[in-house]
Length: 114
Ligand code: 5GP
Ligand code: ZN
Image (cartoon, rainbow, N blue to C red; front, side):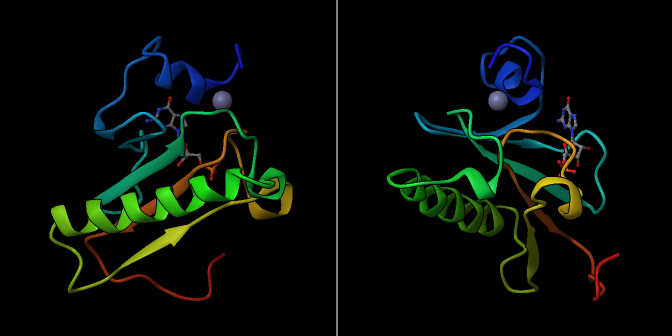
């Protein structure tokens, strides 16, 4: 999508600190990190949000979770643990309309979320 900020990151039209990339997935540091480790993991294909995932696109979700597990291992936060967040649409607090998961770690998290 031409006006989507994360599609622009996928297309290298705007810069990001890329952590991992393959043919279907991109992972990059969040511009406003909420913890020592805060990585956004996205499908390269534009899907607007979790509620819009259908059919074969669910295979991408598996790929995104595998990627997050691998990044957590590489970042050394597997043993201590981490949090994965998806904000979906307005009530979920989603601000960027391209499906993404937050991989957050490096500190203890609190619950419940705000
Ligand atoms: P959401 O609130 O939609 O779940 O999360 C969007 C996230 O994208 C936020 O944590 C925000 O800091 C991050 N973000 C927004 N614009 C940019 C950008 O241009 N570059 C990067 N790296 N992160 C961004
Ligand atoms: Zn997009």
